[in-house]
Length: 551
Image (tube, rainbow, N blue to C red; front, side, top):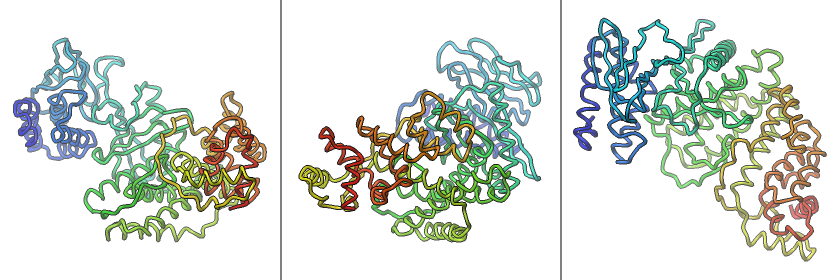
């Protein structure tokens, strides 16, 4: 309010003052109602966005007065919940207004940013515009489907004495902050969300009660997001909207449980780092994180370590408490994330980037991971996890690391002379040059490798589809020699950088050993040299054999 008064006093008077007064009056009568609204993710997101606009002076999609005026919707919601009589101006967005956690009224409007009027008295609740009046149902009252009022669904689950209740909010304008479109929710889609939500909660409370308690203490709102592609889901949290988790509909209850664990850890650490400094100023370049497609800063590494420690903890419990047919899946996931989280945590500990609090926090995570180090994982589970990890790392290196041009030219000259490689591939310097991120559907191979342990029936169905690449299908089926031949053919048939990552995974099983290590550790060198020599009759197999001589 102070910022708004400094920037635009007239706007402040209309958009904030009356709403603030109503909110204060409701608070004096029922503090809990107002506190619950102020700590909601909808309010936090609104406040953060408005402060940003006021400080930066930037234009937004809506007029500043409309954004600021959302406080009126908050105040009206508080009054609705207490039954207090009131009347207040409210901003409409293309003829609609969303009351946080309740629903959306659509009285219509003659202009996109018109202001309407909301009131409550003994006769009920109403929203009026220049077009019509919409009646807002009181608690427990059902509105007609497809009418001008849409209530927000609530998802409720209770198991083993622990209850979780969240709003499924695809309407609030300030929760549209995850970079992914929000789908329109039909009754059947809400039913699917409700079913998975209940099943996931039973999974969590049965085997991961402490993690379930963490989620119950933090999660207030789920924001449904569109699925980017059939092979990829998405989830996210954002610090200013604490308590909200954005996610596309997971494929099953285990996946939803994992997302709830993952994102609740992000939320908790985001809140902690708001209060306790975890990082000191340190010139550490962007680096690899085995859970992301893009190079990450050191602060994001700590977030990733904590969240994937939580994921490993979830799957560790599932190995013992999950249904028998789910134990192998838990084995693969636990083994993989235990190893990767330990590697990144150890790397982070070597850098002078953390404050004393940050180092203490990281040290506690590393100690817990060390306790799990000797817990056995089946050889097959470890093998499948290693394939997934290698596929991701090789793809990342090929996309973002550029080998030194002089070294590649020297290798190319030696190839043409028929000489041995003058420098081992491991000695070729590389530069981090972040490349474009892959399209959502560009993870088909990783998706197939994931289906091996998550859903073998789905793997068979997808593999039989017309769009599945034969080399990827062979790799997922364990036909590694066939897969390696397919990837070499793809490379020789065109500048197929992605095929090098598939070849790295296949070569891990087929050998020869030096070539496999080269592809696992420095695939970008092999790909850059091949591109430099392309057109001279060179084949991927011959080039790898030659490079391996100098490895």
